Amino acid sequence: MALKMTNREVDGVAVVALDGRIVLGEESNALREKVKSLIAGGKKKIILNMNNVTFIDSAGLGTLVAAHHSAKTQGAGLKLCHLGAKFQEVLQITKLLTVFDVYNTEAEAVGSFSKGAGA
Image (cartoon, rainbow, N blue to C red):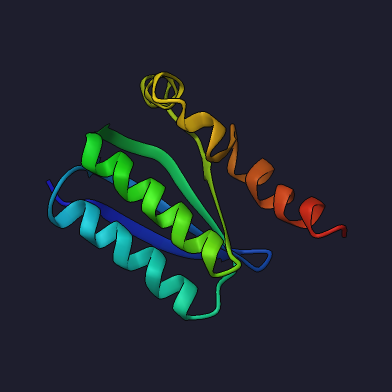
């Protein structure tokens, strides 16, 4: 099943709602390209809403880490929100919770960008 991505903007923050599986192949490539194109388009604040992600494999995790890294190196911020319990556990076990900024709700994640900017 393909990964569906819905893009919208909230208070100057690019929010990408993910729906489906983040797995090796087309899905993880599509996600990587989406983040790249947002950054290339001048977006410095990006949130991935994981609410409807049904499954993620190691390649999917690698894609998230790569997206986070490329965002950081280009002066952008990438944050995650709405992690399910399983996904939260995976990030905890792999110690990736220390890498990503994770928020319970989209509103918290959006708000965190304006706090971080000293607004």
